[in-house]
Image (cartoon, rainbow, N blue to C red; front, side):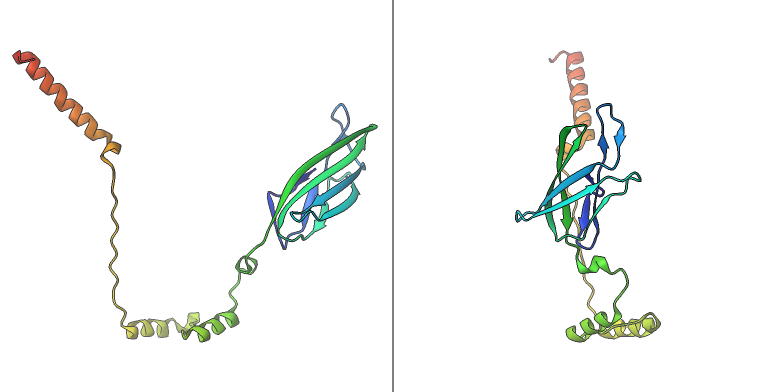
Amino acid sequence: MYPTQESFGTQDDVTLGAETYNAVFERLYNQKIDLTLTDEKKQVRRFSFSNPDDGSPLHLGPLPAGLYRYQARATLGGQPQQDAGELLVQSQPLEALESRADHNLLAQLSRRTGSRLYYPAQFDRLAQDILKANYKPVITAEEDLKDLINLKWIFFVILAFLTVEWAVRKYSGSV
């Protein structure tokens, strides 16, 4: 038993795949599998199904957001088998569900905040309104500090000066 995706959304159809094998790892089909699905509130849902020849998954439908634990049980060749795991259903923000702009909502939002809504045909008016607004420029600065310990070339320059100084002192006999 395994989830068909890493995580599911609250609007998604939650699906689980199931594969059954015999003792020599030959795939078995149409085996009865009992599934127990437990949510974070310990609410238990039970399902019974068989794995079809075409390998299609078990469709559980949309589930509320949360972490679910599943336990699957089957009897294969007279031996009881079981598998367990987890699946995650995440709530999706409303913005992720609709990929197109909702112009009515944008118009309401602009009226509530005292701003204006401009459509593509009104870009000239937008440019005029920006120029009339007389905005003050904002100056920003960004500093990038680096530790000397991270500059390896400085280490090698200092090492070279020390080596040259040592060699000069050694040559002149003052060491």
